[in-house]
Image 1: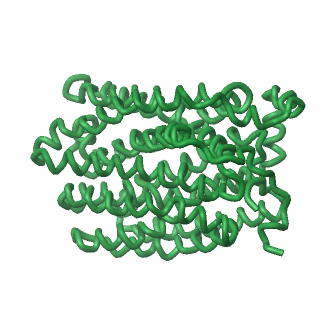
Image 2: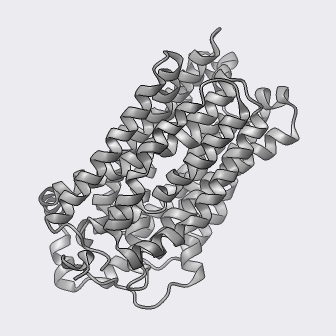
Image 3: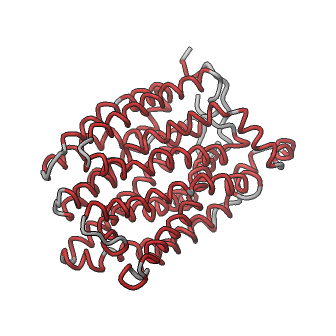
Length: 438
């Protein structure tokens, strides 16, 4: 018997293939969320002197990255508040709220007065906007993945979730890198540092209008349609929902660490290393953004491929191999110790491929660990905690430890959490916490 067949699983509620319009609405919102979220990380080095002026460039960048990290800590609150709303009332409303709030915050950042005008109030305003984005994105991951699990054809859950939560996520990340590259290439370095950093924020805000339209035509929650009336009656109470989630606490812990581990690597490669290159090592920012974009393109293509591999070879087997490969990848980044664009390219491309393969699979693994009746809340809360505790601090830790001569400690930290994620996943799986897949 195949190891993936030793535990009972639920079938996908949707046996037909989802329409392109449904996929575009669902995936487009995921992409926009990551664009808006990541563009701040990429622009942190340029935001720093405008909102957190300091004689030391590294100190200013660390302050900017601290605000970036603070947004992550609002995610668990958003997940706890909006996750149950999605599970018990409406997935669609939560998806629309998330996109609208993310886009509005980006538009405000695009026109926000700086320290020169508002003084310390400028940094406070930036922090408030990031916290607002953190609140609404806290539920987005859970909603998108829960709906994706319902839309996916039976037997192709990994491939479809790889598309929604792999390819579309990377599309948002790559779009942010590409936009940063294009703006940086068009304007002079002085203009980029002075005002052009605002342009990517404005574009992300305007793009939200199109995504709102696409999400507006999504059918109201597919999860509700797929569950029987008696099941829905049991799901009506928030107390019952939290009780069920407590019973699945081992699975929730596994979700937190499975997601947290890959987010350490994700933010190290998409924001930490680029900011290190742009600030501490003073690399050419145009080339830094170009290399980050190239790495992301590989991630875009990989989504359905890695997800499909999990469908065929077994989720546990593929996840274990991919996650263990992160251990040497973390130590590989230690090669980038001084200004050297070629070495930066090598670390970004080779290490980035390993990170990208893991990014294609982690959302699907999280979905498999949560039963349908609490899937949005469970995945959203686990995602928010994982990203907040691990991903949100990743960029800051990388730059800070490098500035203190302890770069190796970041690599060791990432490797230990990667190993812990494998152990917790298999422990949860052995206790029967697998609900989607074979």
